[in-house]
Length: 412
Image (cartoon, rainbow, N blue to C red):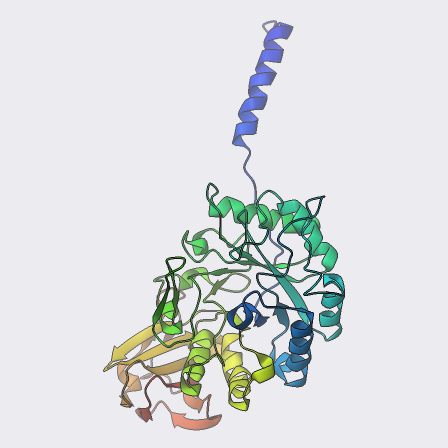
């Protein structure tokens, strides 16, 4: 063996070290298994924006339990933007607003937990949140330890004021920070779908937004002139992204945004909105004011038949099967060989449906599920009317009002 001199060894080690350092990549590591079905709960933003306080949270928690929403599955209360002061403290810590939360955030989290519910907070990957409060950039691990010390259960993480950073690395850093802090926290990526998070976020997050903000309308675009951006009606969001359903499933959900049920649309449109979010296996995060909620809104949000479609253990997002004369047919495979089927009238006029099951077999190209109605007869249950509706031996004939739905469960 040739003799190697000491200076050469030192030089080799030095260059080897630099080489290895350049090859190190950050591995992602979320808490697995926290969202095996789409999360359900309430978020403050749609109705209240930054006008939030301790009283609102406590009243919302109380109503969530008393109204039956908690029993129906809604268990997260998430405070969105505006919960902290405009500046960090001298040590760089986030400071919950003492005027909005006079008893402190820890006490509020404990109150929500005492109701059998879970608690979530909001921040942003950028230097500031979307509403101008302190963002997390450069403070990821410090903020993660703060959230863990509060015993929160859910973090919504936005994407404003992020010039100069990449989404995959920013969200990976925060995911790792949460894991390092040690408390299991559902990580909700709110990146708006601009960087195709469905392609890279599964190892780091439990759910990811696929669009910009929702707006309480059926199929509109609302343009915000002050910021030159748009919010979208729920059907625009439902159809905004193509070919992403294959990326969604247990513990890694496509998030179609918080719901606008009870926020100013008609009851018919609310019902359709809820049906679609259940068909799409989207998280069911209510955004209305529970203190002013009508019985009709509560009935929509707590419909156990539709919630069962959303929470089905198979965890597969539905898709559009056919369109005829403005009536769309959406289908979703369920466990035990069943299917959810929604007939949706996209038009401004009432429509008559005469659907021949035998001429419309279902083939799910992404997950391989099929239904051939010539070979298998299914019993039909109308999920909104909560009653049996015959079988697939006969055509489905029905009238559907404008913007309305018929949602069925087919049971082999």
